[in-house]
Image: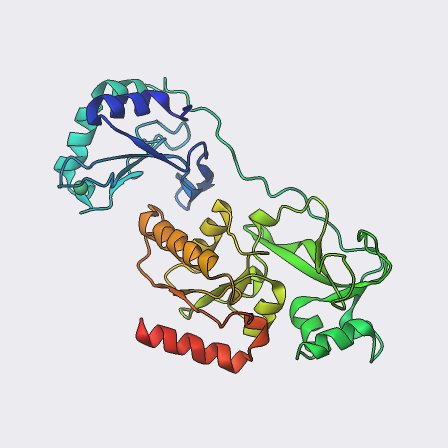
Length: 349
Ligand SMILES: [Zn+2]
């Protein structure tokens, strides 16, 4: 195994015997920001690789002392040694100074090396969102199409008002695509990326307007990195209400706001982190399609684990499963029904 900080990994192995690695190979993603007063701070958006050992200060046997790969390494710009980046999730033992000192003592030979700036951190994988994919050239928003147009009819048939969907979600139509084997136009659903420097259209998904033929229901902009995006993230408003996680854009429309879609039943590691960030301190409600029971349970576990073990945003708010009957999607329900289901779930939690 090739860890990012092998001197630290070796020191921990020598001292603790057994070390587990979490988020293997993921580099820390962080930015240096000048704060008022002239100081520079490191703003961490994702901490990356961790080494896990049994905490020496409590009776931990579940590897609940997490030590980041940058722990002890001097940051050239801030001079900080990332000492914040270690935590005991059993009893928060490192909150006590004597335990912090003890951890430093136990890794002392590593610590001297790291502090002198001689520890080289291997470059890890950084999540690359790719480049934005423009909407098809002949894209027309639904509210600019004639009444009775097949794309408007499709949206209406799903129980939505076309003009409303155009306004809220920017949805439109394209005749020519670039769709595979395109003889018929498709509904084109823009996908936004929410980043520190603003929100912008990053790609699209195109849905066919009927259930006939063998062409796929959904077609995604070629080379779009779906696994780095969440549909609907731009309409999650600040607040403390629940945020729902579903499979597809139309499910998100049904919720109306404060819901995002994964573009499928599985979440990437990056999407899990995005979800934790977007729904910080708010209930998360997993609402996959009715038949995706196993995937939904897996996602609940992943989200709970991510919240519980996050050093940056430890979060005890609930992650709940909204199970729908087999054959039903959130899109098949009414908005009022979904709200009622969510209220009931939260009340019983
Ligand atoms: Zn402990």
